Length: 171
Length: 130
Image (cartoon, rainbow over all chains, first blue to last red; front, side, top):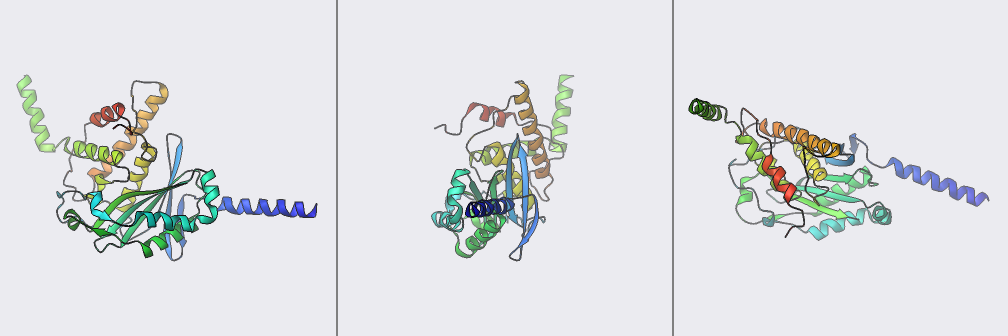
């Protein structure tokens, strides 16, 4: 009986801890970075975006050299998308079954610099996500350390910031 | 009389550059809804990260994570009308933000066209169309 009570107590404690890690609107400091979590509801569906507050957070980003130039073609931006997904999966491996049960997903929008390093990643989540900000901070650190892009064509030379678009990890 | 009206309209368009930004923004939103994750509406301008994030979050919601296109009917059921009004309110808010970006070469002094081409296109195609 004692054991049963202990197990139930431990389970309750764990689930409440887990619930506390879900995202909430606001500004947070983690591992020396400031994160902005934004909650948005559109036609009864809630979503979150999470961003590291970077140098162009609320300042205009540098203009392209030619403002009437052509946009960059996605096929001219090259980086290891499979490895990107593997890095995310590694960080979240402990919770992968829960994430699958919750039909969780992460959509990541990448912005690169001319040297191929990552300037910024914006993360998007469903409103019921169970992914914590701590996990997002770890994913952000790992991706910025391990992922680098290369570029082909000419269009990218016009831009200081090179947006790639979305990489999705779906559970 | 008709001729005078036409001249007035053309002069008005030329002076205010009216409608130019509406068309540029509308085609950019079309592209960004088709190519999920693209932010072409804000890539050629000096947008802030806050603006890009908010826009991309809206695109994600409107297209249900890039899996569908919005179906908009201003004359439908109460739910459809509410959905249309919600879409237009967000769309116009992003259009105004886009128009106000410093150095935007597509800037107009008047915003006066509704995105009829976008609405007609997405009402008549599905995401999985060949």
